Length: 94
Image (cartoon, rainbow, N blue to C red; front, side, top):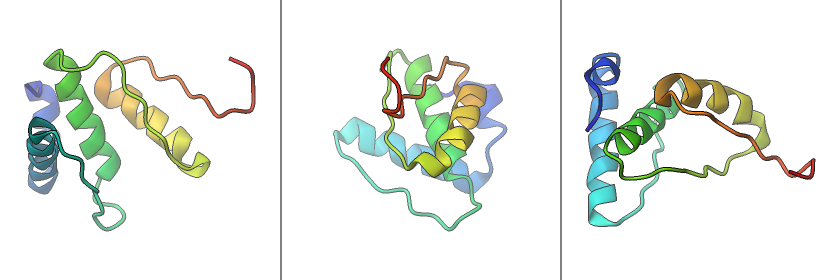
């Protein structure tokens, strides 16, 4: 269940990507999103997560990534999922 306001902001190919992620999720499988740079992989993942949250399929998600992309992903995830995003980088005791 992806909210309409999110679905309508996605390009067609991004909608296809979110549908693909959903089909993998339903099948209990994983996948690798490896589009060219600049096509919105971050947005696709964030939209997929928003759908999972809206469907009450998950409450919490952990994403592991290189430190160089953390800040961009944090901003995008917060914007698209409307959730509190916490970053744990191992440099401080939490």
